[in-house]
Image 1: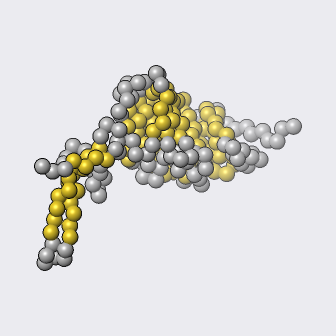
Image 2: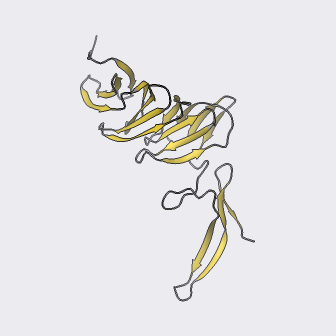
Image 3: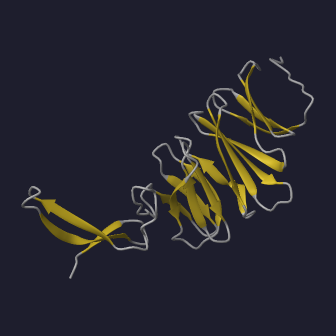
Length: 220
């Protein structure tokens, strides 16, 4: 038997159904809707209307919803983020149409991973801020797809192999303001004693290797 049947004035363009039975649906004109398992409309959100081929991504815990859509002329893309109540969190745009929704995934915290086939790079966008906070570019094989595990690790299917990445891969050194320090020498310094008798010892230069591991190089 039919539990519910919904009709509307706008054409449906994409949908996603979660394990809890909730349905997320996009409509022409940049409309996002969420329905409960009984077909009751819970909330409505919006994303740029001048886009096409939207894809809906919902993290496993349904903490956040992301809509990926191409700009009309395929010159780039939009990603719009919503929280569990449908409140808009942030929106980013990219000029590179080589990104594809088939190579995007969400982890269990709602963080977004996206990849670019030509340069084989994976980047993570923080769910709360909408800012890039993690990158990985140590491999050269073409990326076909990704899947986040409950542990936070990332399974990446590439043209020639499959790999599992941890959160520490391709670690980037940042200062307190979020600026990248990878191209600068960062020193680990031990400070002891009070202000009048303070001593400082330079223990080494801190950097990351090609696998994202932290390394300490002694100072000559």
